[in-house]
Image (cartoon, one colour):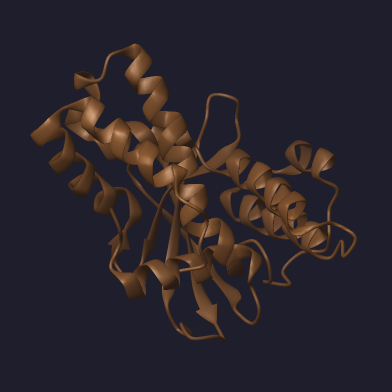
Length: 214
């Protein structure tokens, strides 16, 4: 269950750059961020500020930094919506407890995919190119990686406004490769062959593996 290797590395780099180095906003206390966010672009900018604040705290050990950064990322991605989008027509094959398990496993799976790369952030920067209106009231925030091995790669974050009024990411598209569509194809193949439990077991197995930087 992988994106094409180059795209995965670029997506991880984009994620790292997105929340660790744009220089578009000054550090902001996390507890004050929600109250002032009002647009998708501001969500991206303020997320940058929150994570920069964590990364600059040299007294924090790596595990604690990772945990704090993941907490911020978890608040900025709509995992319930992403789970339904990824499973698509297979969603109804999962009963309520299985749906809940899938959301938890998928959330952990994505965190493991990009968490290690985030902490090794070095030179990537992100240029915000603008916003684009999408169906269902969604908004795509367009960005481009500046510097590093993937300089010039376009990375789009599709944002959706929740019932609580906050904007959260529901998909990431890098150079035309959608995270949601990519995993949808792979997950549906597993479900088609072995049913919901097969996918849940495979995700649990992946999540139990040691973290890597690849």
